[in-house]
Image (cartoon, rainbow, N blue to C red; front, side, top):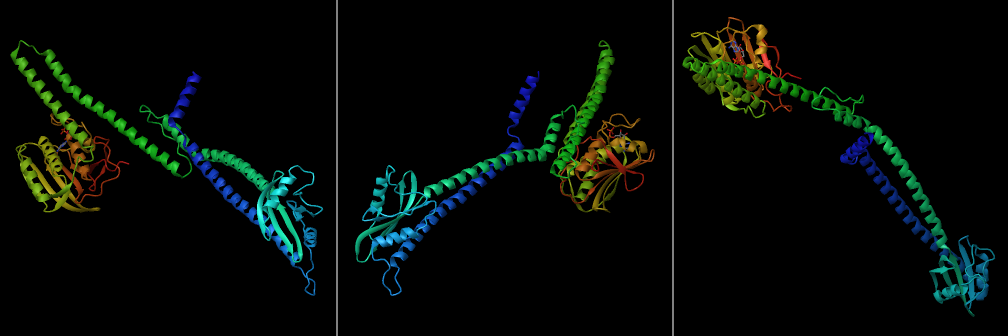
Length: 522
Ligand code: ADP
């Protein structure tokens, strides 16, 4: 079992690919590596060039000293050296070769003098290969000239100054040779390159180790967040990820994540409630139809007709519930309400013309304001018709129903008030909050309603960035007012929760007015 778990964990890690930690570390290490390599290369390339320049400079310096000796004169102007031999002797005596230098002189192509102590001998008498070195030097010699040439001798890489020495009146041909073991100095430099590379690798390893630890520490809250999110399932949306104490991006991410979880949880809960409401609502007519059919005496024509009527009535009711439910579901879409400039006087006239035929009442068009507002004519009409149908349903024949469209200056700018006022049974204060919830019907309300009419009206009001206000007293009639801003505001960034969500209501501006809205939900 543990083996399986290990395998699963390894598979999970593989599926996740490289962790952020490894990726950040790799990038960091790559930068350090490239930085060290470029620095090393540039530094050592410069040092190798400088070495070459210095060695050549030192050789030419020896040449200058040789020239000084050859051209030196007594006080009377006569030359100090009258023979090549004398110049070579003096030059050899005054040469102070460094550890990397060797000096030798030739007279008529034969080795003559060399200093007693020097770093190494260019042509040691008994060393094998000396003859070839001698040959190389003599071959490189150009009469009357001084040259610097690279020569390999006894396994050494040498930079060699070969200078001709001639004195007036002396036929002999002298050669002054200074060899500098540039190879040994290059080797020293390469050793330093190796040391630098070794230290760079150590630096890289230390940086990698420290980086790995530091990045791990920095990312630990993110890792906690990741493992916490793995524990969240649809069945357990209670869980909240821990919010780190620091006020940084990760804390903000955790907070946002928790907020999102809360919204999802509320959405799921609402969905469950909705399904249970719908189930409950549809079960009743189904039970009635089934019960009726079961008890019908099929031989009795009168009984069959009665059952037929009941079944049709209940199916109609189910049809209305299903239709209203689809409407309510549609109202959750952001494009459910599409406000456009609407002439309210024209709207009031056509809405009134439509509602006054719903039933026999004393219909009064109370007010109609002549302004243009941002509204969805079709949806607003639908809400008005619903409110008017309710007014009819809950009032007596012959009573008055007033309809009006007004413009009022509200605290946040001009508002449009669309009002339907009846003289019906009214609604008790305890029910005024509930009736905007779906499937809510007040006891004793007149039968055929689905309990979805007011939630749809509310959804339409909210689609206009508005609310529904209710002023009602039992027995004293009800006034429903859809209130929305005359000019549409900018679209909200967070869409409103789906229709049918738990209503939150506050008291309206007037004390006994109930304002229905889901906007103020946090
Ligand atoms: P219904 O289809 O049952 O009318 P609504 O959502 O439109 O559903 O209304 C919910 C409840 O609110 C109704 O059952 C009724 O009790 C109450 N109601 C709505 N409008 C009025 C009104 N104008 N007068 C009195 N009660 C009303």
